Length: 204
Image (cartoon, rainbow, N blue to C red):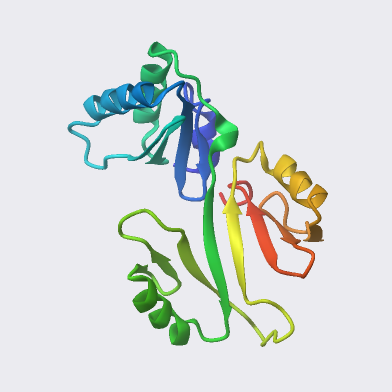
């Protein structure tokens, strides 16, 4: 299922596509409310082949699924609504750290060993415990000694991206390029350290 197909489906208004996953944040009034929602989710996924990733905090529960889990997304939203727990689509995000390299296969083993991560394909590392950001290797055509070669990629909901860009610019950042928007914007801080704000749009 593509990102566009997911967002066009009925009953998934609480959810946002972030790269290859979908995520929703439900704002609870207390930790106890969060535990209650997690309990409901546990009952919904008791027999699921792919259990969701659930992050329980004092003020909310964030749930991450694959794009194929439309029916489960609907059921989780319904469970939250029944408990009177609203969704906060602006609160979800997914960030990764990108390393620019001329020969990715030369640097990937170092980062895999250093972080204790698992490898997926030739350019992607992930935390098997699901706690840390993913690492990706991005190929360079030529060396760029004058630029920082590690940057943050931040996936945000497509309907929140422009506001996040504006906030970063208002906080002293600068726009490097919006030539690829809405797929991604490249921003930099006052000293030139770069970050990309990305959405699912343009990735179908």
